[in-house]
Each structure stands twice: as C-alpha cells, then as structure tokens.
Length: 348
Ligand SMILES: [Ca+2]
Image (cartoon, rainbow, N blue to C red; front, side, top):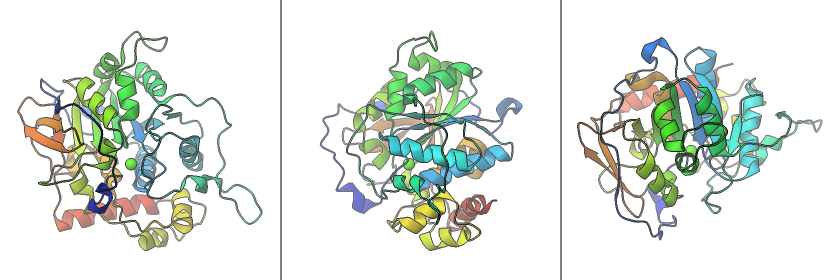
C-alpha cells in the first residue's frame, strides 16, 4: 500500500539518504503490450503482503488472468519480513489451486514497517469443526526472496519476465546486488537485464506537492539501491499513488461481492479485521498493467524518476528514459477500473 496523506506524518523519514537518484536513460526495450511476440507475460509478483488488502486483490487477479491464459505466474516474493506473511500467500496459493507456486521471503529487511491491517493470522482461520479453512502446502525451507528471483529468472527465456512490484523494493535491491552463484553465472543486475522485459512498480507519487509514498519510504535504502542498479535499458512503468487513490472498493462492497462463500481468504480478512482504513486499490492497477499492458491506461511519455533523500519522487521527461508512468484517470475510467476489479473478485 501507499498512503493517504494522514499516514505520511508517521513515516520514519529521518533516513540519511544521499541525494537525488536517477533511474533511467538509454534505449529501453520499446514493447509495452501484454503479449509482445505472441507470448503471454511471465509474471513474478513482489509484495508487502500483511498490511493492506490491495496486495491480495492483485494476487487474485493474477490467478484469474492465468486461468484465462493471459499470463503465467512464476512465483511470489514477499518483501515484508515475517513467516506469517509468506504463509498467508501460501494459503492464498493453495486456495487458488496453486499449492506448488513458489513463495520467497525477505529475511533481511526493515523490521518495523507500518502495518495498516494486521491480517496475516487469518491464514490460520478454522471452520466450526476446528478444521483449517485454508490448507497450506507442506512446510519446508522457504527460499530467500532474492534467491527465488535468481532461480525463476535463470530458468526463464531471455527478455520474458515482467516483475510486478507492489510493495517495498527490498527484495529487488537484494537481487540487483546479488553475486553470481550456482543458480546463475550472472550478477543480479545483469540477470535482470538479460531476463526481465519490464518492471511494473506500484510506488512513487508524482502529483504536485505529493508526500513520500509508502512503498519507497518504508525501506529507503533499498529504494536507493533499486534506482541506482536497475539496468538503464529495462523499462519501468510506475503506477503512482495518485492513480490508485481514486479507486475505492469499500469493505461492505467487497463482502457483498463475495456473498457466495465464506471460504475465501479475502472475505475472511474483511470479516475478521477492520479494513476501513482508507486504503485504495493501488496494487490492483499494477497487476492490470503487468498483464494487459498499456491498453487499460493513459500513460505519460518517457523519462527518468528522481528519488529525493526523504523518499519523494519526481518524474523528469526524457525521450531516452526507461521510465513511464500511469496518469490519473477520469471519473468514468475510475469507475470502470473498479468494475474490472470487482469482476475478478466475483469470479468462481
Ligand atoms: Ca502492497
């Protein structure tokens, strides 16, 4: 999740970061559609699951896109430390018929990130007979987030992977800094350059006077590393806070849309936790961009993104930049996007 303005004053923005950082410049791969070359996007979801529920909608949408043959979901990297957060994703995967979908977990990361809705425990919910509502896969050694990235990328065809980042940049920073190993002879940044078609990043805020956005401000050191090391010829499409701010899926409507069943992880979160926190469907927009590409959005031109020491972001137009950004939609577009998200949520 990102923030609404009231959250920002609580952010730990002391953070002695260095000065402005640039991502970008130089001949990004030009394609931006959902099926360049006729293949569907191979998606790795990178999420701070365990705080806001828009991550859960994004994950569910990727399941449904995959069911419809529009993408392949390679794995999920959880960038909020804590086994319970990874376990929630595992429960979602098993519930969605994907018990083998790999889940990686960041172990080295910010330990005191702000949590808006503490729902991870819901994965342990039971029915009236005490049986688990959401079975898990057999416990095992869960891979480190960066290690899972390295394995999934090394196994993928060149230029085939879409990284859908809807949380902190912790795991991506650790991937970019990773040295060659038994999984790949390439260092992390070169592995990304070889295998990744683009990243779709929910993060940043580009409106005039915008406050620092949560995903970058919670782990500013990783954000700085990401902007420093991300290859200059691999595109980043940003879904900034101001776009998702307008997509409100009220808790009562979520529960109503899931009236068909109680055995649904998202519904149980909404039944057991106070989800009326002012959050919006920020992350869902990154999932749509990752799979459907540009068609569903109005996007600005190319440029670079500047990250200030306190986590604020600025978009600097440049024809050779590797960054683009979604632009805020009209009221009609916002309504249509909410209907799209609701349709996914009402499926099966
Ligand atoms: Ca998120």
